[in-house]
Image 1 (cartoon, rainbow, N blue to C red):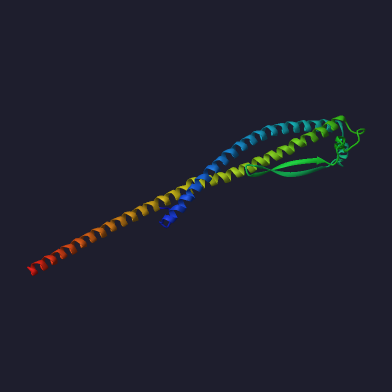
Image 2 (cartoon, rainbow, N blue to C red):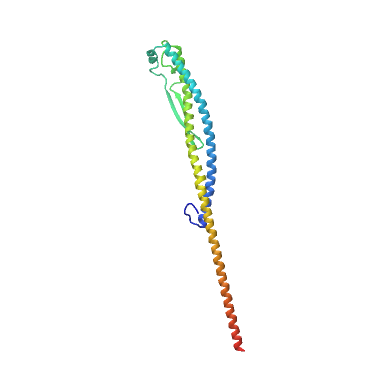
Length: 231
């Protein structure tokens, strides 16, 4: 019996066959999309791991540089040197389509092109170690921005994979089986109706033949009676 109430007509059967064909085609496309998304996701995760390791190493170097600089300078002198930043950064975000998923792409540019503007202090009152720490921090910023971009991409891909997986499962375990069951139910009902119609037609044919034979016998009997009456 079909899972839902359906009208067992040939028009409904044709509609369900079209629905089944569309669902099967959609199921294949979604499975292909899910597989490709998984490939993209795994590649992105590997890139995230590699870049995260790199960023952590660079940050450890930055931390070490600032530790050395703080050992050579007083806390107040370092705080005063870094109090007023000279350079500023503008961040722009665009989107790139990856398997129908809009992933962010970050671009940044500094207020000026002068690389020396990352140092917000004069060199006379600070140590060379502080210069190296600030320069290292400026370099790791690019890697951190790229890491944020790739991690967001991985998150969006994971969400799309989950959505696609639910759709694939819904088609595979609900829509397609129910439609196939409905098609079998309607086909069975139509076959039953056809057999019933054939049986009724055969009975009517037998009744008509019997009636025709009865009428022929009656006609023959009347003819015989007329013949005997004349002779």
